[in-house]
Amino acid sequence: ESAKEGEAMDAKTTRSVRKILCKGENRMIMRVYQIHGEPTRFMCESTSLECPSCKKLFTRLEARNADLKIGSRCPACHQSDLDVRFHLVDVAAFAPVGQCTCEHFQFRLKSALSKLSPVDRVCLSQGEAKRLRCSHIEAARHHALDLTINQYEKGRLVNAGRQTEEGQP
Image (cartoon, rainbow, N blue to C red; front, side, top):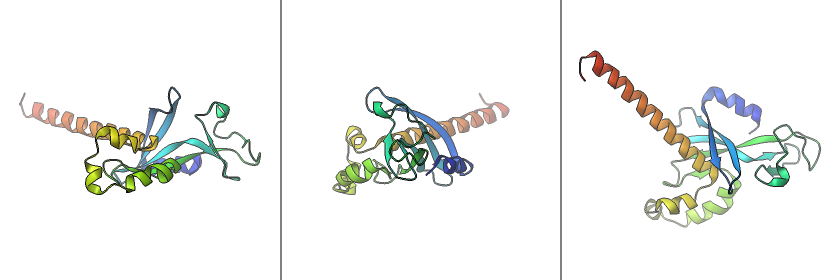
């Protein structure tokens, strides 16, 4: 989806920015948006920029693409400006791994995951499950945990306020 569509998503989503570690020491800000009304589904920013004309992808993690930004002229076709991509992530699919629409998950990780039965997937260790996740699933899981903790804390503070009003310690 384009950056303009991403901005339009804001009205329907909960916005968060997640800093994640990608490929060694390269760090990138990856935006994560929760889809309204769907607590386990998120739109997660790609590490690649896409040319809408030639559909070529340019990963922002490679040194040769370090100068490319959203709105830069496509170095391949020189016809369009590069735009950000978003991937749909469902952290509850293929529990406990998750699912993503990115190419890495669809063509590499999903094939390994689909060889496992649901019982085998549930028995995966945390490390085994993490190896079957792309960076977008990891970012969405971290965001989902942050949302859960924030919601818990709001409830805890509200309950603490009620107890104080009622004269309970």
